[in-house]
Amino acid sequence: MLLEDILAYIKQKESLETLQPHWDNTLNTFPSDGPSFLKPENILENLKWSGLTAEAEAPLLKGADIIRSDHQLSMLAWHCYSLLFTHTGYGQEGFGDAFRKWPSLDSVMGELSGTFYLLIALAMVPEVLKVHGDMEVDAKISKDTCLQISCFSANYRQLTRGQLGISLNQIHWLRNYTAGKLFRIGRFEYMLRPFRGTLTVYRHRDDGTVLALAPDGACYDEGGYEVDNDMETKWKALFKDGNEFVSGYPISPSGRAIDSEVRLKKNEWKCVLKNGDTTLDMHIPSGGGMTLSKCRDSMVNATSFFRKYFPTEPFNNITCFSWTFNPQLQALEFSSDNLARFQRELYLYTGKGPGQEGLWYIFFQEPFDAQTAPRDTSLQRAVADFILAGNTWRNGAMFFLTEDLQKFGTGYYHTKFPVDKLGLEKV
Image (cartoon, rainbow, N blue to C red; front, side, top):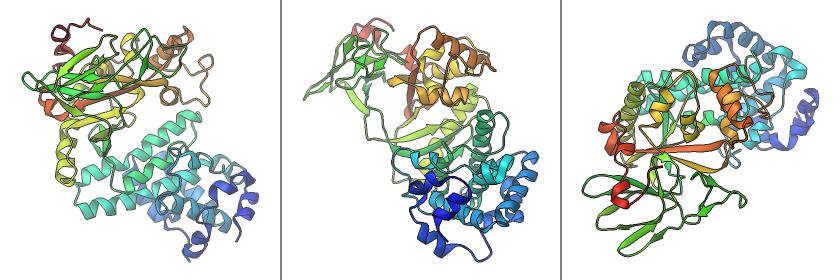
């Protein structure tokens, strides 16, 4: 069977180049009785772990029946499953760009087309359970980890105004769970990876004060937000690491850089976080609220979990890149103040350029247009009005040192920021 023929059948011939890799392997490994993840008994079992509501059962079973009864669709489903979970080198470049180009099934499955990829997503459940079983991970963590399927499905429902499915923008992320890298611990998810931030963080050896210095050559606007547009640049940071001193431009815990160079004595300040260091990288599933107690419990328990199960990969920090930590949210008024409270417990900073990816998670609109964006929630209304007023939406990020977990809830980084010690003005 030719892949070209299948794509012509579903009227998606433009997807040939994207799906061509490993096609011969798909032909050789196709199960004689069809993909197991399309069998009703397996779908029902996977649903128990996924967090999807009972309303999803009937359309998923009907969609699976359509695929099973059509050999071309079954072959395509097996191929997509294999590219996602077996050939894990596929689509690594471009943060999932290849998956975004996968074909639509609208022409052959109509209103059930979204179930095609959601059924493949559900196939992660037995893979996760096997990996977690081998690691002897607690069943509660396994259950919570598999809930990401329902989180992604909820995003798709908002994106499509009520349809069942999963976005191809997100489906590639599922392979992190089946690889035993990403785990949900309470409110948040975590994985160990090299720190991607370019700032450098220091702690005072005597009083424990924490200070972040901006990366060398980073450009900032007059508000202290990092930019990548020369037209917006108001000043440029410098960073020098000498034998006895480190000099640079501070970033305040509120996320804004300060146009005032400082010099730190190395015998007084030690580096505690820099680019490439191992970090406990946090991800934020949708739903569930973010009270300070939930946030703290998740961070504390995740630190214990990863130190137990990955003892050869030591870390001293938790980090996250997300629109959730955009400092601009502090100035907006919307219905929940949990997020603002959480931000005030963390050390924030911004990334270069506009935060378009973050806008996708707020509005679920492709492409984003502030004039026509949904205004169903107070957050959507606040952000849309902010952008329509001529403001640039920023990327956000945070770090938190695990040594300070016992201080969580005190606003430690903000209250201890060494303004007087360094002769700075508060930002």
